[in-house]
Image (tube, rainbow, N blue to C red):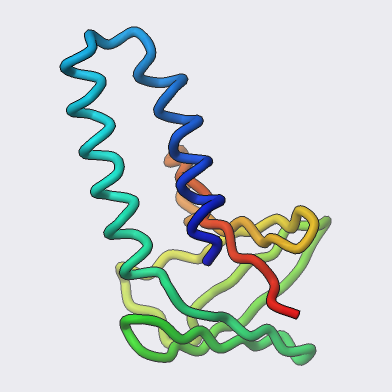
Length: 119
């Protein structure tokens, strides 16, 4: 995961969303968001390897996971092979060397997690 890109994206969202809050509330909200970003980074740090056969393996804090991926009109969809009820598919778009992934939950826009390709 590209930690610097995630922090920059969150900073931009916070600047826009919290601009009208009183200073004390804005500082409290900023601290809460930064703590959440730290949690996301801890639990999401790892790698994902995509294979040409439409499968992928991710490794991270929770251990390895096997995925199936498809690509349609520039959108990548990832689904866990042995998904639990709480596991939702992920949708991603590629910009340069970065894949931005977010949960595929209708009406629930998420903050995309930036994954940068290692060469």
